[in-house]
Length: 81
Image 1 (cartoon, rainbow, N blue to C red):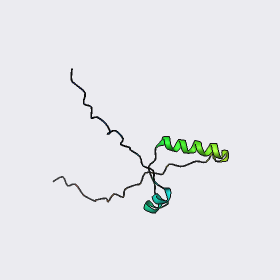
Image 2: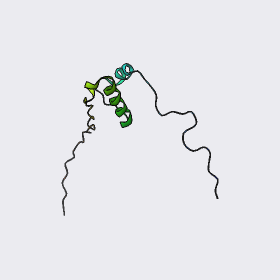
Image 3: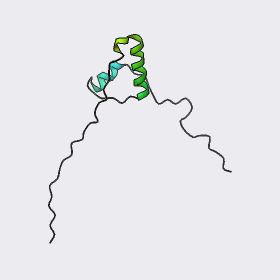
Image 4: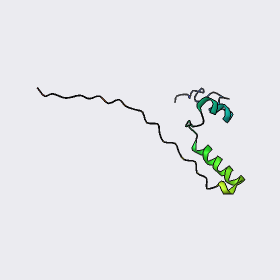
C-alpha cells in the first residue's frame, strides 16, 4: 500500500475569497461592468433582501450575457486545379 501525501490541497489558513468595499470595486471596473459571483452567494443576498423588505422578494437580478468576441472574417477561395 502506498502512503498518502500530507501536503495535498490548499495550505492551512489559505482562503479563496477576500472582502472589498463595493465602492472600491466600482472605482476599478465601473458601475456597468459584469462581475462573477457564486450562485450560493446570490441566493443568500436575495433571501436577505426578502427578510428585510418582503416587497423586494420578487426583485430579480438578471444574469449578464456572455461578452461576445468580435471575430475578424477572412475571405478565401479554394481552387481545384
